[in-house]
Image 1 (tube, rainbow, N blue to C red):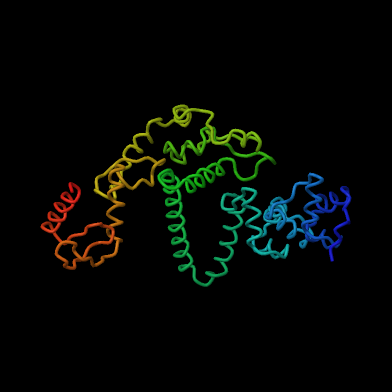
Image 2: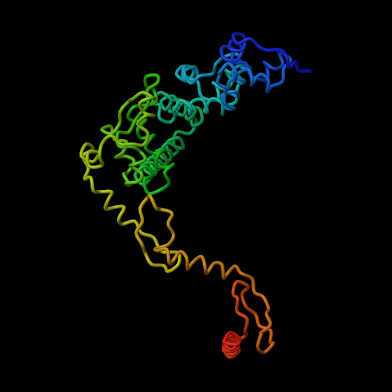
Length: 340
């Protein structure tokens, strides 16, 4: 049973929660208190409560007995270990390793050392596999070269066309190209920044290879990068001039972007900022939505107010007569009643 009168001293709580990184649940059990009581003490001492993600990470590392950082993982990888071998060494799931690397902005596919290791391992396995059949080995090697060439061409095409797709895909393409230039190993606390921002690049249709050109990249502190936000330090014209490309190239490309109106079928221009627009005008949009309402409305039977005949009509319509003659009589009758 919890002891509501017991109060945890501030120094003890800082030592347990901040320094030893024990969970609130663990501390509550130590002092036989309710979890909410421990939270209340933390707020009284102005000790920031960890997020759920941070708590899970600390619990994971406490069970592991070591802080599993990206630096420690990279030490093992640089020693020649693969991801699954690092996971086995620390006794964790393979996804935990890849997650730590992603959080640190490290992509193994961009590391030359890892690519070299993978290539050497593939060659070793290939020699063991094709030792008794050199002709088949040669055929397999040629096939792999074709596959790698095709993948490389497809990747370059995705980078060049990313500005015509979603913002998420564009941002990923820009970051990967920037990592090609700077690599993933950079000074601690430093981040890659685009002088002409990714946000503005997407809105203005700048291809990822141009936006992530070395001219537009710089290393800055995380604080400086966050304070800059989505603002650009240079103009679009300065970007293209520095890269050595005609600055109006993508402007012309954006103007050529057209799509058919979902209502009238007429081709209309659009930009990345309004790429999800479906109609050429507000009138077409309203007309299309009205047609959809009519199409989705169920058919009902009504009794004509003039002749008493039954007729079918869409429920959305308020028609009360079966035809023109009955409608004319109904209108005349309504006029006479109004005059009376």
